[in-house]
Length: 347
Image (cartoon, rainbow, N blue to C red; front, side, top):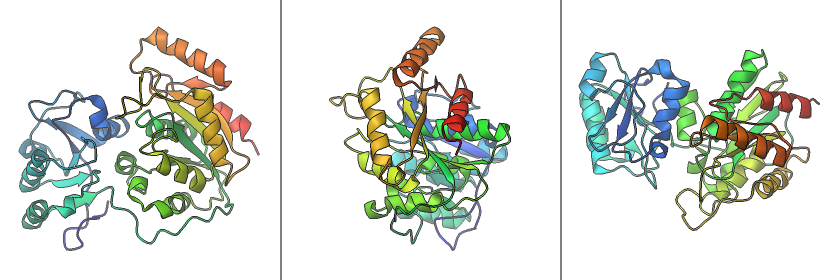
């Protein structure tokens, strides 16, 4: 993996990883670390938590010095806060990791390379800084012109409801069937999991659809690009990035992602979640601007807050409501959704 921070520093960073949880208050705050631990467990040798950290990944607890002695190459800052800022303790712990001989990677909006103390620590230790939210340069403006290839985009009723997990689960299931399929990352966690991608929420608004076109170019092998969605058309804070992805992805298929136990939009206690039929239809209408033939092929539920029987009942109820297969990608797999995709998008 290449360095995106400073050309004067060494050129490579990568696994094995020490996952940094810091002082995270809940599971959603460590979704980057949790995503890496789930999808790339062989890359993750331990976790570092401050004493007030509430969630855990169940990995070996270790500090930076021990992680380095155990063979870790990079500490990934896997915890985030509102706004993606680096607290004083994150800065201090990043410097400690660099002084222990680790590279440091992060997906925060505030960049590692923008902090002079962190940059100085990287230089004196000959270490690499990688900012996953460093946008790709020279992205063109989107055109909406049809291009060869087949594409699926995951969309959501809210933020952090499983769009990345669903796209990765679909990639794995389709590859197990011998089908060409590739996950296309658009967020910091997905980029760290895939090793490539474009941080779509760091792209200037006029270029969002162009970035989606860039990440999923012409494809001639009959396979599928499985594009990680972001935000929600119904989230007042993040609808813009969701719309840009819908236009630039030109999806042939949509999978709607939802967490049935959520009471309101993430971070907005006075904003309820949209009704499911309305949400799905709004996404289809928006997607038709660049692909009039787009189809909904399934629903992915995050049922982590439900008991097993409740989860199964929720999938049946929502599947019947929307007349689509409905599964939890983590606990139930996505085989029914893959069957639906192949049947509904056969041409």
